[in-house]
Image 1 (cartoon, chains in turn yellow, orange):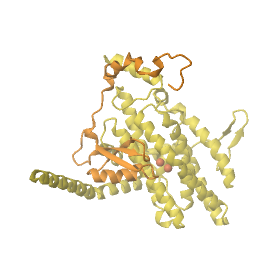
Image 2 (cartoon, protein in one colour):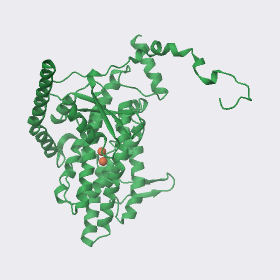
Image 3 (cartoon, chains in turn yellow, red):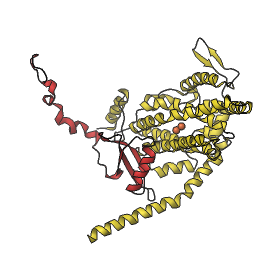
Image 4 (spheres, chains in turn orange, brown):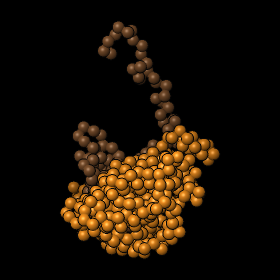
Length: 317
Length: 98
Ligand SMILES: [Fe+2]
Ligand SMILES: [Fe+2]
C-alpha cells in the first residue's frame, strides 16, 4: 500500500468509529499528538499526588487518612496506566520522565496551587477530581484503544475521589463556624483554577478541530467547562456554600448558568512556570526520582544475579 | 517497537483472571526488574479493588503479534465457509431441539 492508501484506510477507520490499535498504521501527527496528550495526562496524575500528599500525616482522623492514602495511591495507578498506554506508541518511560523533569513537558496547572488547610483536600476531591471526571468520561470512547481502555479504568476509580472530597466539604460546611469558613475559603481559592482546568476558550484552542476529528477529544473546552459549572453550582447549594462569582446567573434561554470572566492571564502565567508552587512541585518530583535511583539499580542487579544463578544451576543439572 | 533503555526496568504485559472460571484478560503493562516483582506490581497497579484472583505476566518483548496489515489474507480462509455456522442449514419447521 502507498502512504496515501494507508492514510485513506486510517481515515475510514476513524470515520466509522473503529478503534485504532498500536500496530495499526497511523499518521505521524496523530501519533505525536497522542503521545503528548497521554503523557501530559500521566504527568498530571503523578504531580497531582503532591498537593494531597502534603496532608497525609495531618489528616484529622484515621478514616480520613486511610481514604486520602487510597485516593493518592489511585492517582499513582492512573499515572502508570497512562504511561504504559503512551509507551504503546513507541516512546520509552524514561524519555517521558525526562521530559517532565526537564520542564519540557507540561502537566495540569491546577497542581501548582498550594494546599494550605485541610479543607483543600475536600475542595480538590470535589472540584479538581470533579473537573477531571468531566474531562475524562468522553475519553473512554477515544479512538486510540490503549488510551480508551486506560480511561475506562481511571473513570471507574475517580468517582470515589470526588465523593470523598464532597463528604469532607459537607462535614466542614455543616460543622462549626470556623469549619464552615474554612470550607468556603477553600472553595473560593479552588473554584477559578478548576474552571481553567478545561483549557483556554475554544476560540484560542487551534488544535481542537483536528483532535475532535481524530476522536482524541470528544467535546470542546468550553462545552466541558459549561457542563461542569452547571452541575457544580447545584452541588454547592447542597453544601450551603457560595460560588465565588458575582456574575453567576441562571440563563433561562440558554438553559445554562452564565458566569463571570476567567482570568486567563493568571492561567498562562501558571502554565509558563510562575504559579505559586511550580518550582516546588518539580523539585520534589525530581528529588523523588533521583533518590530512588539506587533502588532501581539494586533491583536490576538483584534480578540479574538471580537469573545468572538460575542459569548456572540449570547447566549443573 | 520500544527501544530498550539501558537502565530502565523491562516492560511486562499483565493478564488477569477476574474470577474463577473466566479467562485471563489483558489488563495493561508495567515495568519491573523481574517476573516476581512484575506480579507484585501488577497486584498494586491492576487489582486494588479485588479485580483479580490470578495474574499472569510475560515480558513484552516475548509477545508475537499478527500484523494488522496482513489481516485480510490471514483471515481470508474463513471468509467463504459459511457452512461452518448452524444458520447455513435449513431444517423443516417440525424439527425441534436442534
Ligand atoms: Fe486520577
Ligand atoms: Fe482522582
